[in-house]
Amino acid sequence: MSPDVIAVFVPIVAIIFGVAVAVVSIIGTHRQRMQRTELRHRERLAAIEKGLELPPDPPEQESTPARRPRHLLRGLVFLFVGLALTAAFYQNHSDGFPFLYGLIPVAAGIAYLLYYVIEGRHEVPRANGTPPDAPPR
Image (tube, rainbow, N blue to C red; front, side, top):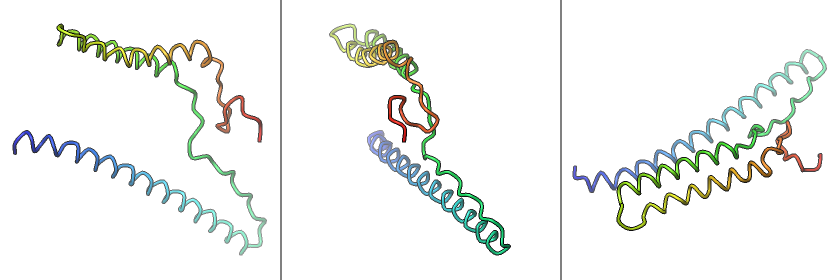
């Protein structure tokens, strides 16, 4: 196969693989939720048949768990990736200014770090996943 044909197939295979992973993830999550519902249904039917008191329904869980904001991590990653790109572009192209493109992720990283220093330290997510300044339900 020629390199041109391979160059065309690589993005196509990557896109198909990415979509397939997303579809499998969605189907797996749905099947797991359905199995949980079926087990809860069987448990309730068995309790009714035996004349026992019905167990309470478990609280609905959110699909995304509460996580701490990661502004510091993102800022450091963008900063150092940008610095590495700037250095690599500078070494490869000393004529002209293509190395300035590496400053784009540097700027994004600095913005994340500034946000972390100014506001991010004060953010503490609640247990139910709502932001700290949201009114209680």
